[in-house]
Figure 1: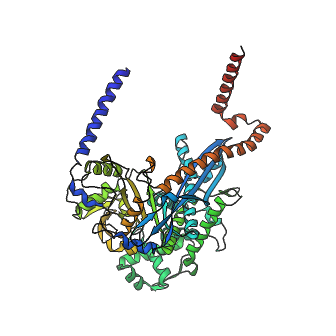
Figure 2: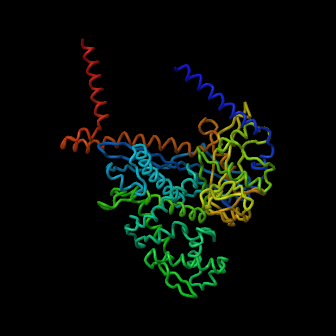
Figure 3: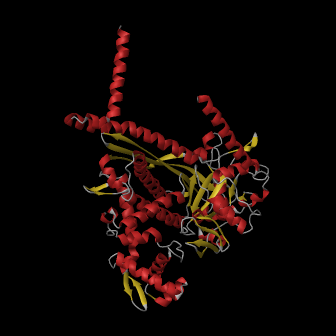
Length: 600
């Protein structure tokens, strides 16, 4: 029987290998794909370097976090640690020196938390809109609690560092887009519920309202680009009213380029939003004029104050981080709402202080480059080809493509950079527009920009290379606006026009600056750090060691208190669990047998 299964496995594996080899062979000598890659042949990056560095020495900082949890006496103990490593970075007007040899850990920039939670109370902190009756699903849901808090720690630390240090470059060991997307989804779920514990946190700026949450979810600090199209049109109108004050309906229509029917629909939605939030939005809405209530403009002040209060409660307070009152808990949705606000605040502070924030992703299963960027490039005649790759995973596709075409795709390289809104688009197959929304709605443009990169080729074999990674960054109008142009796409089976960023003509100095910095920031002497980032590599090792140390130390602290409770009330099998208790009894029996055998 085993030999039969082995033969079947052999044949099936051989078939898959042949299929994969055939796909890889079809990518060989595909010179047309060279149009999708950018290199460091010129000095375009100097323009961006002069803007960010001003010939001054500063620091490059890398931030990473780690998490884990234990289960003791029906209690979950969550461990979270976040830390940062920094090194000098100097631009002398002609070249950049990232001195990774002088890398050090700054003890001031560490955030850690150990959070106890009764298993029964986890239902208060998890998403109340989803059921977790199955044990596997429950364990997956349980992971979301420390992950949300770890994200909170990394973003909080990033803001602290920007505000206290002469930082020029900030690396995050996480994608900005991949962090914002799930957090924003949780914030939408929170708004759908219509209630949040965040509204009960008192601050000097007053209490946050659900309307504030709704506005902050899209508008952020108020300076973000908001497209004048559904589902963002409503918020674009509110942004305009905040900035301009009272407007007539005709003035609002001109500002947003709306026809009469579109304007009437927008006004209805504004009134519906006002009704939903107990008349807190509109001061005036009549036949001619629309005006917001005065307190609406301070929504971000209140959102930021609540975000600061949550950060301090989790990482600085002696109180339980998640339990405000006996029956009031901060949920995962609340924490991720705060994470959305922190990302917006990080964008604002980075632009204000001239800090280049770069999110680096090691592992990704993304396919947006193959399913949307390549079809876009074919449609725009950037790519002289009519077929799309058979390998859908971006990382696998780019790794194989560059390996089998080593002669004309040299390292370091990056792909053309593109708007993260393309991650929500796919090839349409419709003559009206080249791309369509993958899930009805197209994510807003001019917020985040993404690119793949590869830094090193092995000297002994130019087909052997360091891994392909992803970086993303905030949209920067000074360098990116020139690359934005209108594009028709399908959304809900209607043709809409978006204005995304795509580096499809020339070189963006900012992205070549990032590639230059990345190419000077890895460590070729350590196998795991080749082509990656030395600061993030060290931060990763440090936080994992820190979490392991926390577990071994704090587990004893918790057991000391729980053991007293166990002995007093005889909760033995609750404390250990049946399997755990049985394993300890069996191990004691084996030890006794070994000792008895030695004595004999």
